[in-house]
Image 1 (cartoon, rainbow, N blue to C red):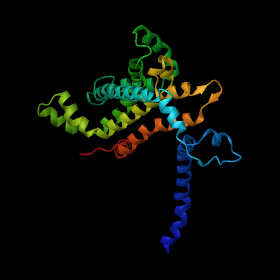
Image 2 (cartoon, rainbow, N blue to C red):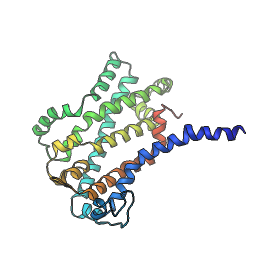
Image 3 (cartoon, rainbow, N blue to C red):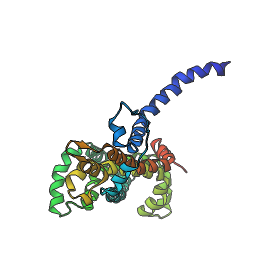
Image 4 (cartoon, rainbow, N blue to C red):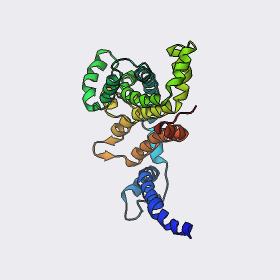
Amino acid sequence: MDYLASIPRKVVTVYIPLAIFLFILLFPFYWMTITTFKSNEELYNYEDFSPFWVSNPTLANVYKLFFETSYPTWLWNTMVVSVAATFLSLFCAVCAAYAIERLRFKGARTAGLTIFLAYLVPPSILFIPLATLVYAYGVFDSNWALILTYPTFLIPFCTWLLMGYFRSIPYELEECALIDGATRLQILIKIMLPLAVPGLISAGIFAFTLSWNEFIYALTFISSSEHKTVPVGVVTELVEGDVYHWGSLMAGALMGSLPVAILYSFFVEHYVSSMTGAVKE
């Protein structure tokens, strides 16, 4: 009877809130999906067609996106920029976080706090001085403009995240390695990094996601269509004045969100582990 009495309570406290949360979370993806496969007649004629499902599916919007625009090139540019910026940021963040948390030098806490405060600076302020540097070094309108500027907001966040994870790793492991004659570089590569894999994956996912969805820098530093990324290309090329190609816009948004969703699905266990500060010994 206690089990039966607990069922209504679980429905009210767990299942109903979870169902509402899932509906709010997944409805935008459902709307993007059905809009992708709708014809223009269905998109604008709500008297004869329901807005919540597809009556006559069509691939015209997907065809327009992939064969009448430079979307494949935008997708490739976004992938290259995101991967390169993520690896560059992770390398710098690992070095900075290890030095701050494990070397115990004077002013380490102040340096860590300063790095975190740098992450709080809005990109809308940073892109103005960065634009001067991009022009000065001659990398404007190229992938390098984004690869070199994205770490300005990725490194502070990744460093702050890895600092907390390195802090949770026992100091005794490092001290034993030092007694056995290991160098700091060997300790970092052979001991710290294997134990910090969940933290590295978490920081990498965050960095990759932020790079993939970044808009302001990509809009400012890229002008030619062949070098645009997905967030900028979809908005600028599929909106002609006051004409919005909603089917292709939703197709571009849907295809652009799939790589990040797939990435999260592969590393969700490591991601959750890093968020809880777990260390596998």
